[in-house]
Image (tube, rainbow, N blue to C red):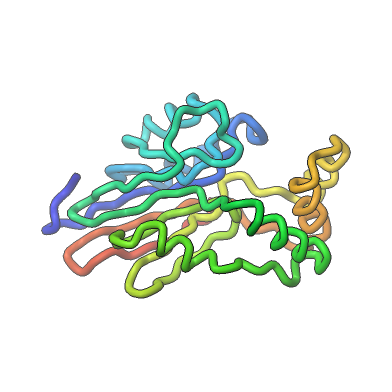
Length: 211
């Protein structure tokens, strides 16, 4: 897709959770990603209809998140764009890693939430990739590790303290209960966001766009 002689724009989306928690996708996604050649979805999609809606903007390549049990999507994939290899994964790992980290975050109300080698794990999962796109954390982040761009576009669906308290009333499982405890004490909720990759002769650059 595209050539190395021109800049190719790729939209990046994650954690839409639609219609699981969002009734519909924000119209702003279409405005921000207008004109992209491809959309990468890093999991926790919500439904095939959500992928179809994004597909009205541009072709979509997606992976399965831990909330996507009913969707026939791969857990990880590599997409080639303008001669560059982009790894795509949701980012959820073994509960042997995630549960202790979540427990530590719960005890400290989110002040200490160890990533336990997340960036090295992402880099090692796609050793030949020029960039790795992931989601799951609901926190936007862009950085380079050993020359590889790691991009989390943030989440389209963000949980407010009020919604966390409402969901806790439904007696969720231990894992969900733990991180909802942290969120319900937050003073500031991260803004929903998407990402943009621009791939050109000088390499790959990333932007995070607030919805």
